[in-house]
Amino acid sequence: MLTNIMFFLPSINGIWIVEYTDAEDRPVHVQLHPYERWVEMLETIPFVTGA
Image (tube, rainbow, N blue to C red; front, side):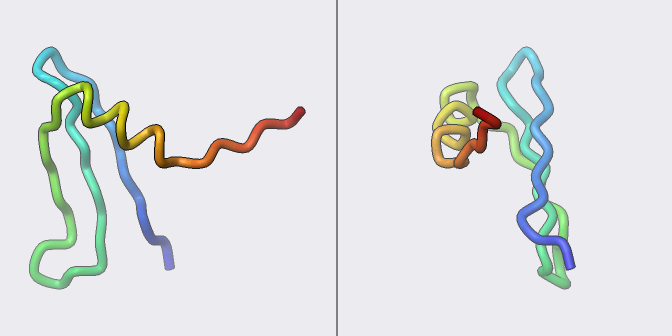
């Protein structure tokens, strides 16, 4: 089972964030966030580099 699937779609008004969840009543959430919010979200994601 896949979890925490998110897509980030840039627009001139900010970043559209599409998130898939296991909620039966509304499994897909689409929200428009300002660019700053997207940067905040990226800072919480651990990155692995092949150094």
